[in-house]
Amino acid sequence: MVDESDKNLGRRAELEQRRERILQMGGSKAVEERHKKGQLSARERVQRFFDPGTFSEIGMHVRHRTTAFGMDRREVPAEGVITGFGKVNGRHVVVAAEDYTAMAGTFGEYHGKKFVRAVDFAKDNGWPFVGMNDSGGARLQEGMDTLESYGWLFRSQILASGIIPQIALLMGPCLGGQAYHPVMQDFLIQTRHTGFMGIAGPAFVKTQTGEEISLEELSGYKAHAIKSGQTHVVAEDDAECLEKCKELLAFLPVNNKERPPRIRTDDDPDRKEDLLSLMPEHPHQPFDMYKVIAKIVDDGYFFETLGLHARNIITGFARFNGRPVGIVATQPKWMAGCIDIDAADKGARFVRFCDLFNIPLLTLHDSPGYLIGSQQDWGGILRHGAKLLFAWADATVPLIAVIMRKSYAGAHYGMLDKAIGADLVFAWPTARITIVGAETAASVIFAREIRESAQPDEVREQRIREYSETYENPYCAAERGYVDDVIDPSETRRTINRALDALEGKTVARPWRKYSNINL
Image (cartoon, rainbow, N blue to C red; front, side, top):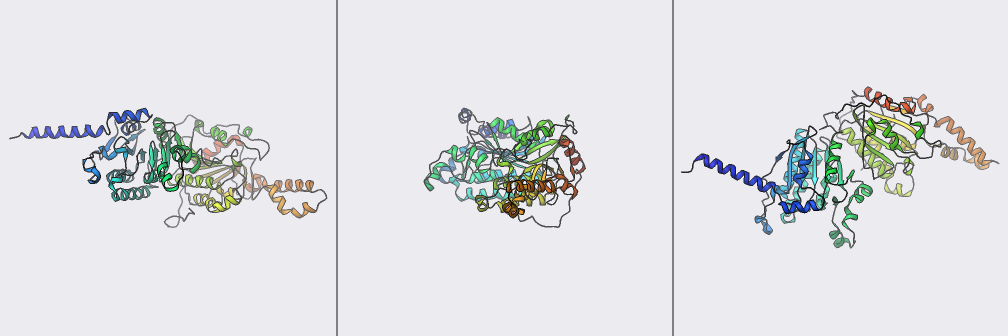
């Protein structure tokens, strides 16, 4: 008769053997191949990401049920994806890390179910979710079961959207159906040399369309950080990708019911800076908005998102007196700070994210308007430009605007003004706030007078000057209450901090509705 204690020892030994086999994933040789390519294994990524000793794995023993095409003899450790939770800088985070060494990290039915379980677990507990994507794509051996599992994941992510922050780390290939779920998350960080994303790979593109293109050109970081605007941050390698994710998480609350984490700072909230010296004398000469941002935020630290895409508008996170704040700023050095289709999309999505997660918003504004012309009109600049208006009007977080120079036409609303929902609007003495610039206004209002004058150039300059003195100065807007105060530029940081203090308890009551019907 077998002793019960011997049985228990045997069961314990079996558990340890199973664990050890699964922990090896694709084996040491496969891991070594990863290292040669400058990549970490999935377990190494998880270990590096979480605070030491805090990670708990969920679903280690999950395995597929497919028998077709030799899958009944195929063991895929952990189903090619490591899921679980732990702490990052002391706060809980849930992860799903795909492992390319285990059947190329392919996405099958139970791989998908583990992903869904991780997202749902994060949502139910109110913790951020991070997906580490590194997969050969759909597991075709599982047919319809694979296809259906993508749908489960998409729905799970969508239902968690706006409840918890979701961040995708693109650390390896991510092609076909696999590419949809990273772009559906709030932020995507892509490694420069090893992260690839696309609706189809080069071979499939050539077969279906005849186009010959490399993986790097089709799916690399330039395709998405610069052109498509789907990659928010570019990292050099796995290690920097993980660090960038931690930096981003530090600005965000763990869920939509919490406030963003405020930290201690030694940077004086009333610190003055000579900002006026950054401004050229002529109102149409560009200046670098990044220099302004660096001087007014805590310790000069700014975490930019989509920095390589739609560079005429700047979005990202900074802190004011320890508070996380989302910044939306025009960049006069790029397209004169005009708002085009891409800039409107970029700004609107950032504003909506900040509003979803209780992050106050600040605009820094110098823009002559929305970009005009046939390509913009035909591309839907009116529809895309309206997204910014929807985003600002829907937002309920503290909204602060600083108008530095030009605030003309549609950009006056697109960059946040009192009428569209700003709580407080401040202007520098250099601000020019009106429906259009004086040159444009004079050419329309006084067209006949100028045309019929014996000295048209002199009349034109006189009328431009007259219109500018009447309407472009910030005091006209301040007299009407459209601007709350005209401030000394050196006091910008102090003004913003005091405004944030005043608006800390802001509450907004709105009639019930599901959501606004934004023009997508």
